[in-house]
Structure formats: C-alpha cells, structure tokens
Length: 270
Image 1 (cartoon, rainbow, N blue to C red):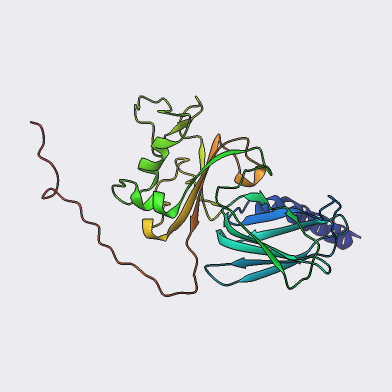
Image 2: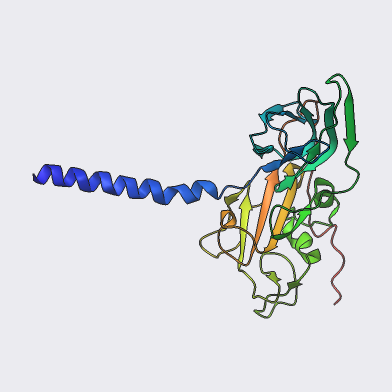
C-alpha cells in the first residue's frame, strides 16, 4: 500500500508540473498571425475557401481553409512580406498583396466576386493595416529604424527607447529617458520585461537587460509593447521583444567592425 501511495503522489506531482509549465510555453511570442472572414457580394459567408499565404522573402507557402462560418485563422507565421490568395468554386480568385506582417495579429477579410476561377481580383495594400485584433499599445522598430539609430556600443535600446511615446527617466536620480532604466507612462524605471524571440532575456541578478542584446545586423525588428499587453509577454509595465532575422531565398550578408578608443573620442572639456 505504501508503494502504491508514493506512486500516486509521484504521478500527481508530475501532472502538476506539466500543467504549471504550459503557460511558459505560451509566453513565447516571435511570430505573427493572420485571421479573417470571407464573404460573397451579398455579405453571406463562404465556407471551404482555399487560402494560400506566401512569404515573398522565403517562398514558404502556408495553406488553410475557411470553416462553416467563413472564418480562417493562421498563426505562427514569420514576420515578413506576404501575399494571400482566396479561391473557391464559382468565384474569381481574390489576391491581397503587399501585406506586411510583424509580431502581431492582423485581420485580412476578403469579399469574393462571382465569376470564373481563372479570373483574378488583386488588391495591393498601400497603407499599414489597422490593428483591430488586440487592444495593446505598441511600437515596431523596423530593420531600417534599428540600423539608422545612432547606436553607440551596439546596444540598440540606449537610443531607440528615447523615442517611445510616454517615456520618462524612471526616477533613481537619472535624467535620461532611455536604456534599461527607462520608465513608461509615468512608472518608475527597471520595470520592463526584455525578451529575445519572445523568450525572457531579463537578468535575474539586476532585473534588466544587461548584456542580453544581439548584434545590430542580426535584428529584424523590435516590438515595444507599452500598455494593455497579454500574459504571453510576462510581467512588467512594458515589454521589449527583439526578433532576429531569419533566412531568405537569396544570398546576402554583411561585415562590420566596431572600435572605440581615446584616439577617436572628443577632447575632455578640462
């Protein structure tokens, strides 16, 4: 009886650990999501529509179909430039191009026109899509913004956090509204959560980003979420999520050298 009792306790403990670990898996946020509804010219939903989502930089194709309510939902898409096509019997193919996906959820709806499948209706997105799928407030620093920032020492957040809406020095005697000690929306500093590819990169010894920053050339984008964000970003009054570049279907590369010493520094005032 005693052996059976220990076995039951061990199984119960293992089950508790498995349940407790699941929220940790859900906290990784390094991909985007596309969802929407497909209708006909009368506004009625169209089920069983074949959807093809193509990453224009990698050539990777993801397929899906609408359900009985005309809805579709495609998660786990890498950030990048996409085209999306919608095909159904008795309707013209609808193609949406110029879709820029970041680490977020965007809604792409389609209204199919009656006609032959051989015919095609193409819509090119000219302006950024309105974020309607979440209530968080965030700023995305693109690859170009990260590269153009006057970064010293290779630490991206020393400069980019300066331009966020609602930043403040964060107290503690600092007058600089940037870097690890930045405050957001009137809060004190050192309360941000720093992530790389959606995984926690905040040092336990001092509760800040410390040395957890990748080379500037490796950064695809930085997502700064400053209000109303979900549990997947963990704790803190703000979350700074660094997304790294992934491979594309063409050759590319870069080389750089960083040097800083007294020979290049301005003379001391005294």
